Image: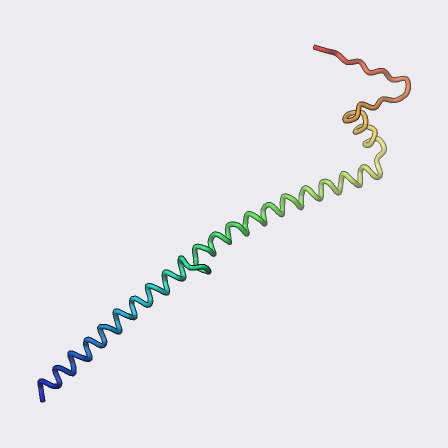
Amino acid sequence: MARRQKKRKRGEMRGRSFLVVFGIFLLVLIASDIVFGHLGLREYVTLKRRHDALIAKRMLLEKEVRGLEAEVERLKSDMSYIEEIARRELGFVKEREKIIIIDE
């Protein structure tokens, strides 16, 4: 009877050992999927960096839009500003004005 109990205990120990090893294997598998899987930690970090970069770019573009909107309003209302741009960028002159070009 003592032998049967020892064999039963050995069998139970082997079963428990197998369950422990299988459990550890399963945990390692799940942990690797969490870190390296499609929706894993590495993917999250990559997406977070991309999200932050896009937010920074959006802020710069919004600032540029505000500047352009201000220039549009100035072009609508400030005739001297329009004249300044026409002279500088298009080379316009008023009547009886002469342009002197100095070639160096």
